[in-house]
Image 1 (spheres, rainbow, N blue to C red):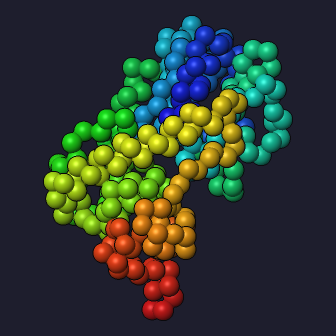
Image 2 (image 1 turned 90 degrees about the vertical axis):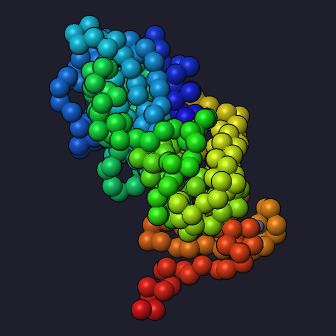
Image 3 (image 1 turned 180 degrees about the horizontal axis):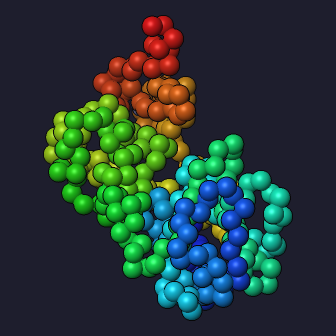
Length: 279
Ligand SMILES: [Zn+2]
């Protein structure tokens, strides 16, 4: 999201919205102000908060408005030089720009989960989706001690957007590996040194990923982003830190990868999928 926000923030401000269409069922979750309020309005800024994007525009009829966008896991925002067909089943929101260009929210896969809300700018920060968010994981997360003081495993705690905003399944594996912490260690069971290692790993890993994106991700923005992972989904391969074979725990719709040597004192954690089958 960060790189998407950066790229769009460099391109959209000053561009006039011609019209906005929402061919996707239920993609638009608000009705007041109406989408047509954006017609003719110039974009003023693009920001990110957690995993959400805020596209801001100055409208004639309603003043400053914010289009709040959540791509969920399968949505993508792309800036096209040509307008797409309305019959494209992946299209959820089409923002038409001058010279036939179009900012398009597409969603891949069968489920329609990506959504947008059109809000008055002064109300945007108070919206449910933003209000509950924890502090940003990057670039400068606050002290972790009180933040993580919960009896929950780190791999769920760090992905909880209300605890800390901006980390998904992929990067939590990279961060915990860099910090040499077990994904099942409890948040309230960390030493001061571990808390510090975790914070450092979060900043350095997210920084490493962003540096790759900064180099490789350009407009019109790709359908598939590079995934500069070293651990996540690399089970069966040697650990980049110590050479031990990486292991994984499989859940219904994702995988959690880790290094037994660096993170779990040599223990191979139970494969939940397997243990459920054996019950
Ligand atoms: Zn290792």
